[in-house]
Length: 185
Image 1 (cartoon, rainbow, N blue to C red):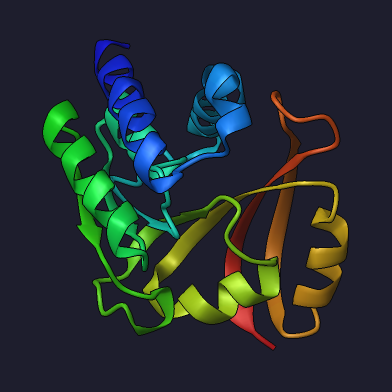
Image 2 (cartoon, rainbow, N blue to C red):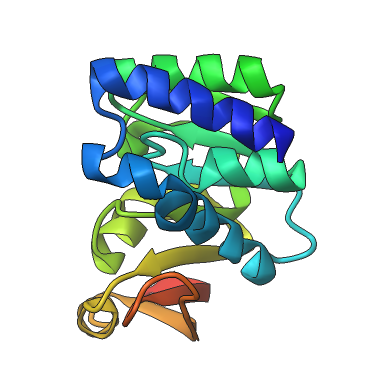
């Protein structure tokens, strides 16, 4: 928790300049962002020693999970200012993570056994942009709001996948999707 606290202090300072999270969320950062990220630990495959976080933004969930689990995370963030923040947060917290200031669809990284994305894109678009980054037998973990079922319906027109759904502990009506065996139709 000491490293998480260092991260949150840095985030609050930087947020005044580059708006990493909504100002209204600052007072609720532990519940709204940190606990929301930490709940994903229970759904991470135990064998995944490396993961990719798409559109990392302020570091939720990837940086928080790197700090909490020591899983190596590649954080993909297209916004240069947010990528700079993430680099500084990694330095301050000594998190096992690396930042790539690049768009997901052009990222050329070794495929990872786990890909996460929070508030990134609908499921079909997430798969389309990132499937080249998923290792064979890999898993997606996608926290979703009330549109999860509609997003899955759309995604199934283009993708075959095994879907597991878990109720979020932090958001009313929110769902955590764990997708595996993902292939194009």
